[in-house]
Image 1 (spheres, one colour):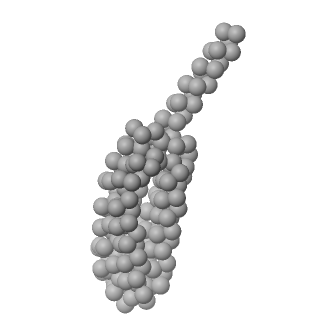
Image 2 (spheres, helix red, strand yellow):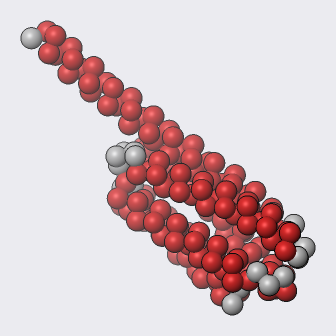
Image 3 (cartoon, rainbow, N blue to C red):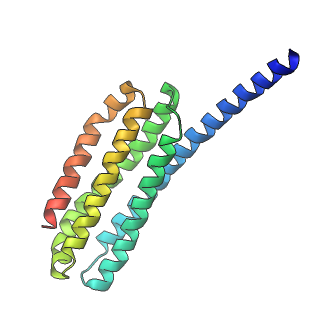
Length: 172
């Protein structure tokens, strides 16, 4: 009986530790996403035209997409966030979202240079891919994050969706 109780406590303790680790990883991945978006934004901002520069920016944006997927997958592995964990995650999100909005504004502003280089369709497709990743992330967040926290992020999410739509349209 004592052994069963001990095993039960160990299992519960391991589950709690794993959940904490998953949440910490999800927050870390959100921070990594902010950095990857910042790098992509800087790359697009520094783009002066031409095909070779477009390839460089595509690489940076691809890294941001990978970071977004990692953030989404980490969130999925968190098995739902407690209100305290959701607050910490939301804080990481609030650091990332202005960077993303700025990156989308920069992309929209640089769209004419991509058109001149003849790579506007590819750039638009990349923005669409990122937008799709954002939508999948949103679906995952709705499953993992308490509704109260999601309500706090609603205005920002709408603003980001609008910025994606505007950036996509700029590449037409």
